[in-house]
Length: 109
Image (cartoon, rainbow, N blue to C red):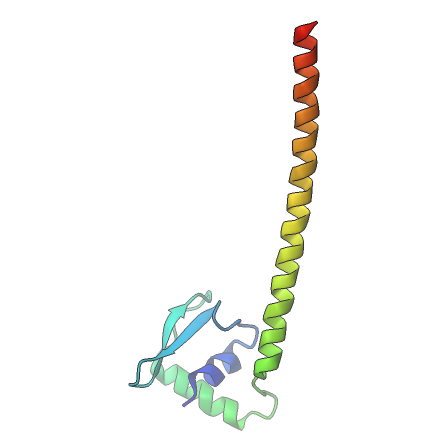
């Protein structure tokens, strides 16, 4: 059984290494982290999903390139959102600085 394929069959929108982390210490693969809003699947469920994924012609696991492309897109969107936040914070800080200088000027008069 290939855990990655089983999980991606059941949760095609899941993001590997974010929503779940798989690990293999030499005794077989297992789920190290599970961050999806669903119970951690049992071995039986994983086996069933994997068998279904092999039968299903509708499901094709995303390629590594597709997965990396999706992650890159999400990171770019997050970076853009952070840049916008920083820009807004900079503008607010500039306004506060002007107000502070104006208040200091009024106090000196």
